[in-house]
Length: 341
Image (cartoon, rainbow, N blue to C red; front, side, top):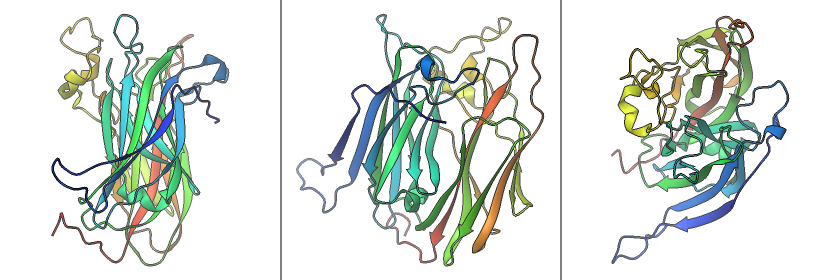
């Protein structure tokens, strides 16, 4: 799927963090690399009879230098989603929307962070991406996307890459390969990817995200989870159903959440349990340790168990799942970490 851009005021700024007041700058100050722009939906860019989650003006992109964290330090991505306000001072788009940052790598697109805005509110979302460092290299094209459907500019996005001096523990990233990044996936579907694990790495694992969404306002698949099965070389290694039920704790992040049930006026839309996500929060990645990924070639497969929802009269009842995954592993030599000694 091709992506089209509508970027207002896109810029790239390099910021140096100085020392505290009255102190000289540190020997090697952390560096923040930043891009920003505004997104809007353009119906003319949407293929006819096709539901598009991202694309159609929903994306900005810039090539950025990738700061290298010190030994034992971390690399973070910071995503700010800021709603555009109308003449009434209220957000133009007051729905909860998916947002993400994706890196283009030689091995494929790699999702760095996924978040869901609140109803009528943006937010700042931070993700540790230290394990992804080997795939990013020294310079990389990043794409930030937020799906909103009003036909005017709706959201401003800002992405920053930040290093921290400590916090990585004994991690020493040495290998990372994206597996898949699927925007729309129907039930009873399977994704397979081949990965070659090099010699001399430790702790191979998969970092994945899966969230279910409704395409037409129906329950599928935002409020109905499906069983996910992960296999390595045909052997089942994990089985789970993405689910979150802590939406009731995030009311302050959802000022425009409506009341979906007239018989229960105390219930807000942001309170509802959902398939792996909560309005106003980032999607926490699932980490699967996989000693089965020994050095050599392996096939990793994800299967969703279930049946495709049936149409209801003239209104299709359908949904989709946003999927991403990557294999990561560390160097056998553990990195020193001042924060964990």
